[in-house]
Image 1 (tube, rainbow, N blue to C red):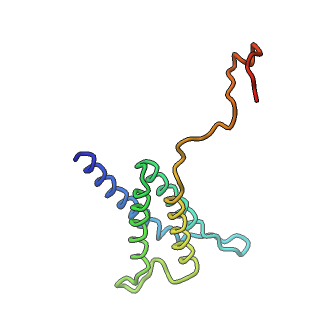
Image 2 (image 1 turned 90 degrees about the vertical axis):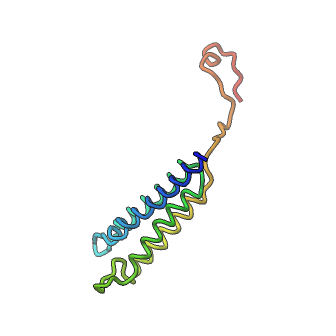
Image 3 (image 1 turned 180 degrees about the vertical axis):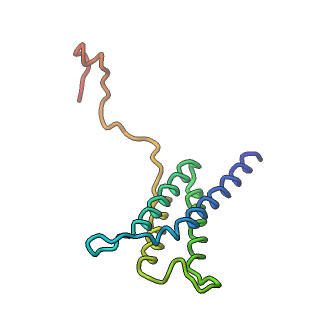
Length: 142
């Protein structure tokens, strides 16, 4: 029973972590700079990269793709709430191309970060030779 309690609390932590990324990431996604007349949305790029790293890290840490999905769900819930009209009439994520790029890009990064398999065994791809074999000339390479 203790293992299940730990999994539930870790799952809640993953949801809250994703929600925090959405909470601070949506306002940061509007940050941009103009270089030679081209607007670069560096805030959106930074948040999407951070989101991908956190989703992949959560999946790897928990050894479960569900953990990455929970981070994604937490991020999506808060981010979609930012697209709604506030009582004062303001919108944090307006209905423009940059916002769609942030939403779709973030979701695609989350899908790939969750979907990619874990690296468990890396093949060496050849015969291993010890240093002693090389010095004495007794090893066979090839």
